Image 1 (cartoon, rainbow, N blue to C red):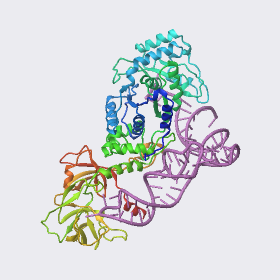
Image 2 (cartoon, chains in turn brown, orange; image 1 turned 180 degrees about the vertical axis):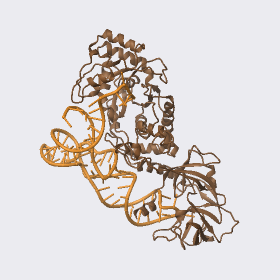
Image 3 (tube, rainbow, N blue to C red; image 1 turned 45 degrees about the vertical axis):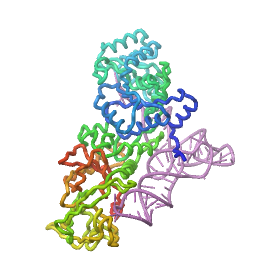
Image 4 (cartoon, chains in turn red, yellow; image 1 turned 90 degrees about the vertical axis):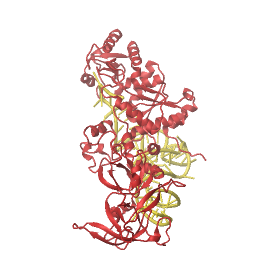
Length: 556
RNA sequence: UGCCCGAUAGUAUAAUGGUAGUACAACUGUUUUUGGUGCAGUUUGUCUAGGUUCGAAUCCUGGUCGGGCAACCA
């Protein structure tokens, strides 16, 4: 049986177009980022959508950098965007730039002037804004609206030739100053910017606006389905107006609701602030919702693609639960991550009936979820171990099935032990836990017949290595920081990063490979950070494991 | 107070005039050498008022609520 997933509204439109033989069934989409920041999880949704649709319907996707504003854009961003898309697992057909079309766009503008559909306006930005009216009042013409075609041609050529300073003149489309759609009230097509462009250098001092570049670029590339987010809906009539007046390929614009996620922010402006004002260490800080941040945090491309699939595509505003993203990465890593033992908050456990000088090597499987196994690694076991402080309770409650006076637990991959006594230091803190082990209860060859409820992880004191561990939590304390009173930065979670300087790790973890996920048993999924070096290992926590016990105790 | 978009469980998303389904979350139980995973199950929903129809989440009308639009940004 084929798996029948229902179509989203864009797929329905496309299937309808294919049925009608539109463009001979050819499907060409594009992903059009402005290179003025790093890509985030919201872009991932758009990437998966554009590339996914093209793949599904045997089409192609262009990568087009929408680089019409040289003052905010940079090659650093171009490079990161390329890398992130590749990492997500997508291949674009052509790599293009809006700036490739500057000559052609200029000719388009001349055409419109010749048709009497564009004019040069000398008014200031303020004057133009004032003359535009308001949504409820029509606009009024500025003095230059009735210039002759010849004069407009000359003036526009002079603008291009650099005869005027920034802001002195603009080219506007002559449409309808009384339109109920503000975008049709003689929108700006070109502005003067004496700025160096990262690709065209100093060739140009006039640059097209979004509305006079995007649709035209789509048309030049013969994009069949130009998919963008909801806020461009009011631009669509303008998109179509230019295409119609210029008589160029009729690309069609479709809009979907952008991704919003709770406990984070998604606007480039806000993310840039977090970076510039050092609330985070950079665009790739593991707390950032950027692709590079998620990658560094330990997210896999597959988990992000699955997430994009699960959130769906519609035209309704949404706020997706961060929990769904976390589910997706756990789902992936559970199947692939090697299990390792790490003690983060150690207390010493001494096995009194185990020979002091003996070291036994335990064989522990890498991943019990993999059918047929995924290999194993050796773990040294000895009479002194580190265990987690919260795996011992002086006065255990009823539902607590870990260690406490008289209680028994299984040491993962080793023996069952029973707690005999414990020692406190002068501050009243438990400093040593004394146990006896059951020799015939060894993992894999247990003949003791004893069944215990709890299994805890451990690291042998002899042979233990150390590592720095960075525990990440949500970046904001509130679900929707942008919607709160005041500055969104007031809502940053002060505990979004906890650093454990010297956690005890099992020896094999010294061989940890970058880019691979590890499950620290009972703790969560972790991966090596780029700050890591052989003599100073650093791990990032990607996500915790689900923790039914933590939930239980937070209830009481 | 102009124009545009939207409204289905807590969160998303499907049902395209004919049984309101799926995922996450929550809760039970079960399995388990991870209080993880797996498995089984439970709870929770069509914004509202009319209309059309044998039959409406779906079509029509009014209302309510939410969002967007007046950058020389994209």
